[in-house]
Structures are given as C-alpha cells and as structure tokens.
Image 1 (cartoon, rainbow, N blue to C red):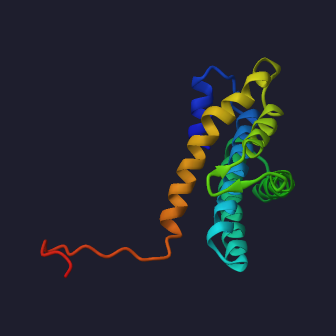
Image 2 (image 1 turned 60 degrees about the horizontal axis):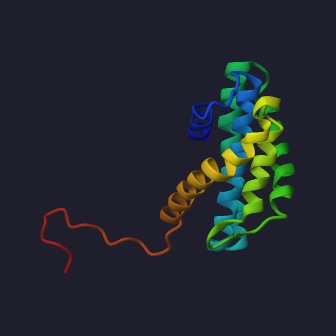
Length: 168
C-alpha cells in the first residue's frame, strides 16, 4: 500500500499528509485484503480461508490503527474498529465482482478506483481511477499472488544439500 501511495504521488497526484494519506492507505489495504481473500478462496478450505482472512484483516487493522493513532492521535481501538467496519462494507462491494485464475476482473479493480475517487481532491478525482486500474492494482495483485503462491504452496520444496553433494 505504501508503494502505491509513493507511485501515485510520483504520478503528480496530490495526497496530503494527514487524514487523506490514511484514507488512501485504508482503501488500498482493503483492496489487498480482498485480493488475498480471493486467492485463499482458490487454495484453501472454507474454514482455513476464514481463519486466514480473519487473521490477516485483524493484523492489518492493528498495524494501521497503531500508525494512525501515533501520527494523528485518537484511540487505537476505535481506529481499528473503523478500519474493520469499512473493510466489511467494502467486502460487500468487492463481492459483486469476479476474481478468477487470471486475477481480478476489470470491475474488481475499477471498484478500487471508485473507492479512491472518494479520497482524492476534485483536481485528481477524474484520473485516479485510471491510475489504480492501469498501474497500481496490477503491480499489487502480482505481488500478492506471488507471495501467497509461495506461502500457500502445498508441496514442500526439496531442501538443498548444503555440502554441495546434491540430493540423491
């Protein structure tokens, strides 16, 4: 999410330090949790997916709330709850869109752009959807797909023989 924020700023979008900065991070983090959940849907049992996504969402919310409350003040507990509430609200929106073996549908990533559009000032709101669909979402999805593919790999890799003799 931080990379998306940096890249978006480099593309001359104005994202002010403070509430707008955290609103941007919130939307992008929620998008990433939704991506991870869809990948888990393909690879895990329903129970394991629920556990994985719940743990991920709570950990992301805790980290977010910790940083938000440290930099902008406010209750860490309230900030975490607000993040979780918005995550649940957005999950209902993302649920309307497909995420297949080839990744998210156009509408899935467009929904991210729509959510980001609400965060941006009027000057940037018309362009942020393209930035999310064309640049930020594809890179982030690729990173999450690779990370979770490695993490959720069901067949353990053969360990290397550190003596140089090789496995026989």
